[in-house]
Length: 258
Image 1 (cartoon, rainbow, N blue to C red):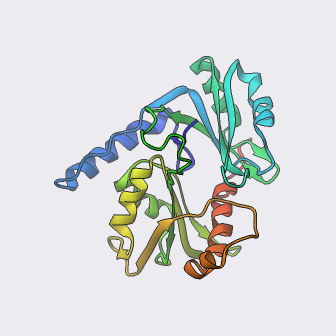
Image 2: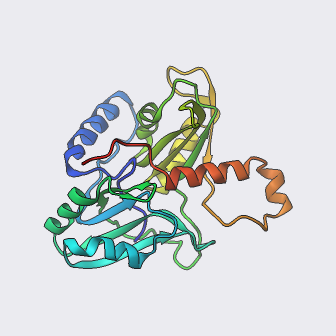
């Protein structure tokens, strides 16, 4: 599966689609001369599962979901360079009723310290031409630094959703709940991520005081063997990698559903 989902920020269930569509229309009216953002189209048989434990593989994911119906495809998405889980996966059922049952039962389901987010995946579009066989990664994850202290995940989503459909969005906090002034936004397309970088990097978000830095986030990877040139170009790379892992693998705290 290509990454074209809705979730964590999220691939949203059916109940939130109309809300997202309405907000998109409002934003498109406000921005004169800009192309309106198309509301996502969902595949109601296909689910995206976010915040998977790092050691959960495709076989275990299938075992978790197969009690709800016939699974036609199941995959934990891995980083091509490291072979490590990216913290999310896809499960496709034979019918939409089966998929709906899985959402009802497993959304917010806890596995150890992880709380799963299960929702409908975006319908896949035709593969983009030109990259097949090249091994080129179409990055969709953004790292945002130097956020104002009062900016939370909702604020970040409100600003960055003007550039495209957001799959995940989060402002990181420390153990005391204070903001780390770092955020991550994952879009469903590479084009939306590029648009956000052009719009916000080196600029202030409306109503804020700080100039923010926006760039592509590093993929989670196994430690060592970083070249000297990489270290010089990106001195904060290790910190960004660790924050990225936290974003992908640890969801915001939620109240347990009985």
